[in-house]
Length: 98
Image (cartoon, rainbow, N blue to C red; front, side):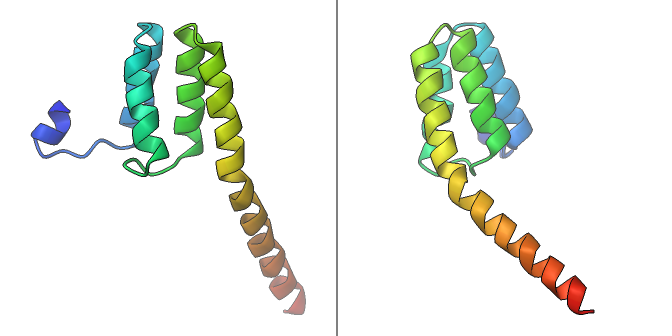
């Protein structure tokens, strides 16, 4: 929040480190706040950040929440994997035609 007050926009690395600190300090409300921002599009979805949230919940001794986020992450990124493989397949086809 202080960064935003100063006109600076936190990046994904900032959020990963922040959520990691929240987890180590067992401040699961902080983890929850960042996860909510991630889930509702205030922070751009990023697989590394999802994994950091999962690790933070585990560090804060909240394995049930870690598992919930893990399941949601799989669902969120499942469609992206399919579209990426289609694009890779198309580029391979183009390379073969050349």
